[in-house]
Length: 137
Image 1 (cartoon, rainbow, N blue to C red):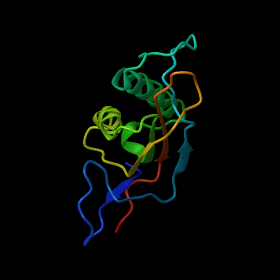
Image 2: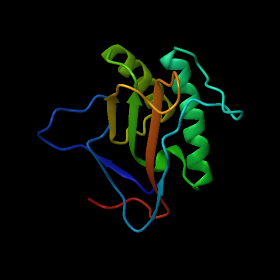
Image 3: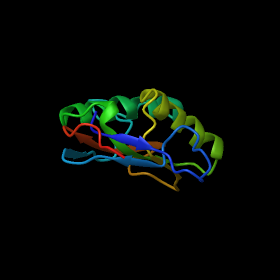
Image 4: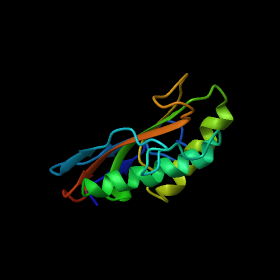
């Protein structure tokens, strides 16, 4: 694994993500924001943030794989949800978190007014580090 996840002593424990990810000497992979479109370019999930988040994760994992990265290589995610409802944000983020299992990389969750495609509710981007091995504290 190229990414070491750390939490900061003295800060509140984060719920399902780490405070810090450290990697050195590897290749950095940046993804564009993965969106809930299928291979034909059709929106998947309608007005359901969970269904949209599931398609987003499928697309994000494909993008990471194309860059040579696996979920455990992810050093940071940013999750955008077009909603002012905190429950919609948490619901979509839970799909993202579940996709990474116990690899709780740092993550930022944002409620936004609008995303790029009509009726799009969820978008996720990631940064991964591959090929360096774990760093030492």
